[in-house]
Length: 152
Image (cartoon, rainbow, N blue to C red; front, top):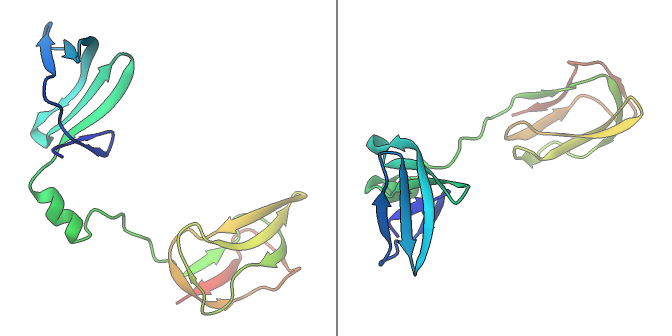
């Protein structure tokens, strides 16, 4: 596994050949079939290419020696934003509170249901945290920007 095609690890295939027509267009021959390609972006210094082959775009990256170390250290994971409070994004009436103090929430976790303009909206966390206190109750009418939940 030396290559990543569209962010997926891929084994390299033996027996494929590439013929360059010029500095931008090429033909790949593999298992008796020909595929026409175009180099869209050459980021060789970063070991990355963007190729268009038979009208599909591929992001290709050569695996680097540091990739495994970066993965083992967990540095390839996106950082989660820690939240301190959650405010109403719009005015409305609280239909249901879906969390309680002490609950741990992740980004995208449902927090509460808010009725606004005759529609029920499930409001979700924009980060990670532990619920410290809930400042509203079911049925409460809230203004846009009102703090509804505080986090530790």
